[in-house]
Image 1 (cartoon, rainbow, N blue to C red):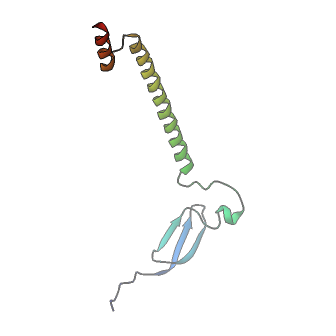
Image 2 (image 1 turned 90 degrees about the vertical axis):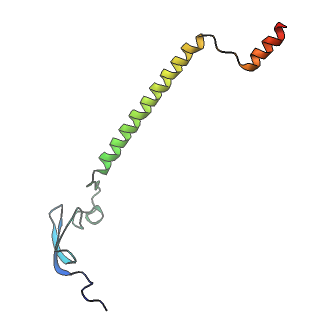
Image 3 (image 1 turned 180 degrees about the vertical axis):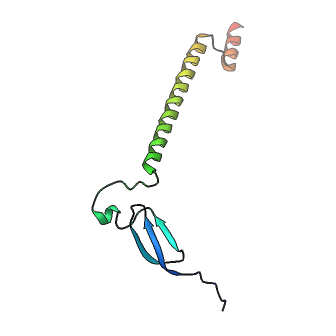
Length: 108
């Protein structure tokens, strides 16, 4: 059997939360920092609040703004193409091969 393959276990690991709460547990690290613990988690406290420590709500809002801007730009481009097409529509359109052959038959 291999020796020294298991990690070092610290029985006095200090876990520190972002809210300021700290407690001792066992871990393979000497100390841990967490963003949320039982002292500040909404499930345990009974308070309803957004737990947005990584900025997920802000990130989502930014994505929504970018999507709206892209959609607006696409609509403007579509309108510009439509205007260009209507301008080109005033110029005499080309005849198709079928129409040209039909005219040639009629002229004989």
